[in-house]
Length: 198
Image 1 (cartoon, rainbow, N blue to C red):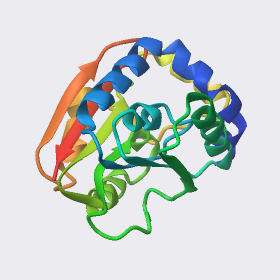
Image 2 (image 1 turned 90 degrees about the vertical axis):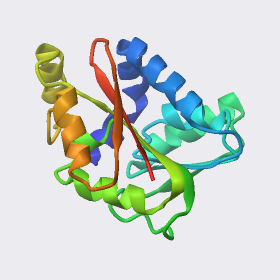
Image 3 (image 1 turned 90 degrees about the horizontal axis):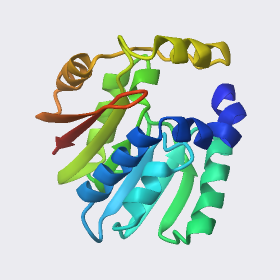
């Protein structure tokens, strides 16, 4: 957690470097979030996908384990007038919500960081309402951008797994949470945008 607290102030700069991918992730998120929905965004960082969802959602709960990430996200919410967003420190493996609470659950670019991504997916799926969507965009770095990843590792970035798009989809299917649809977003660091419907 110290790593994420340390880099919270420059995290948006990393997003800018991979700007094409982030812009498309946000655009897809906007399309997939219906009007008037209740949304949970887990491991939200500084809230890029939170604010994309907030454009149409009734309410969005933006969560992360890093207090510094949430502090930056709160500042961004004030700047863009996102008064339908609230913030909490939450653990993705223990969300403390009742079953079937949210219409949309988002966990962007976090599953490759976890030693037990299947456990996180099952917990996210648990709090999703029937008919709701689980949005899981994740960087698929295997066989890509090795030099950039090695630079990130020098400052403490330590992903648990590196996936190809096919491997990422297979991991999600192994969670037993239904059909997985994916779309590859190409860019400096490619992203596989996965969607599960409950």
